[in-house]
Image (cartoon, rainbow, N blue to C red):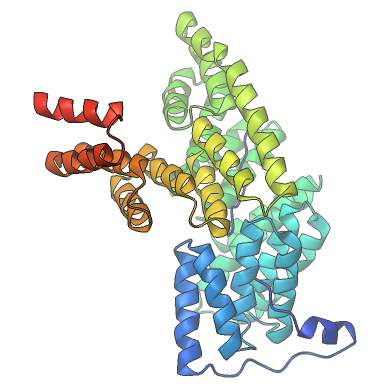
Length: 416
């Protein structure tokens, strides 16, 4: 049960009415003033850092001093897409392209916005426009446009696959790899295409190419492991699927197929243990699906995003949890419980540096938040800073003298 999806990651009103009344292509963007250029730089940095709330505020400020800069609604559109505010994203992309019809990647992201709404025909039309713009930019010495064309061809192939047009999907994947033979997404999706056709040898070849190109992508590891199982290479499959289960404990397919693999190897007790977990995982997956739908219906409700993020953490889909927390923070940047969960996610992912930064930022905003001090102490203890840990836990007891966990942690320090 492979599942692979590009994950790509605001609104200025004005020219839309003119466009509806028949205005022609808008004049090109004027060169921004030094003040506007500084704001544009800050806007790009905030977006790149995932600080969407700040990016939105900067977009509004930039629009006041640079009212016709297409980059502003373009970035807004990307954030709105990530927040599942698709109508606003469409309006933002339309505005950006009205001001600059040749803006790189704008047609592509407009297509992605349609793709996520399952409007696949519309998505294809937008992808084709981006493809045409890039084709004009390709020269014998250029590399970036060629790589981008490969990515677009792969996404076009995926769209055809979801439309149920496998031959066109296959052709697009091949076109992508002809442009860039290292495109891991094209390899992964072409591997899935061959698997659906029952051509497992070809499927395994492309899945392995994808994993070689991005060995950190757990989805590619699962794809290879499942294909190894299907081709009877059980020992290799067991090793790979075991690694996937460790990183994705809530992945139904990984647990199920690891159980089947171990059974095939004669390790029936161990295999049955993994098979017995599948029902619980399916229940979590169903809850996550409901939470995902709730977010789509109520994208402006930060609590829905928080619930989705917590479920993603529980299942082990940490990248998706990060995305959901980021969306929630864009709407509720001062929510202490949310900031605490977001910092805890960094701990779960093993990134103590990021966790430390997040807890310190949280406590700067609210130094009376006892749970934050407790978790900060845990990070200090994990990173070999016992005195800093003690200070943090003592701060917890100052705020809440009856806290049992803080005192227990201090007692453990004294025993060492």
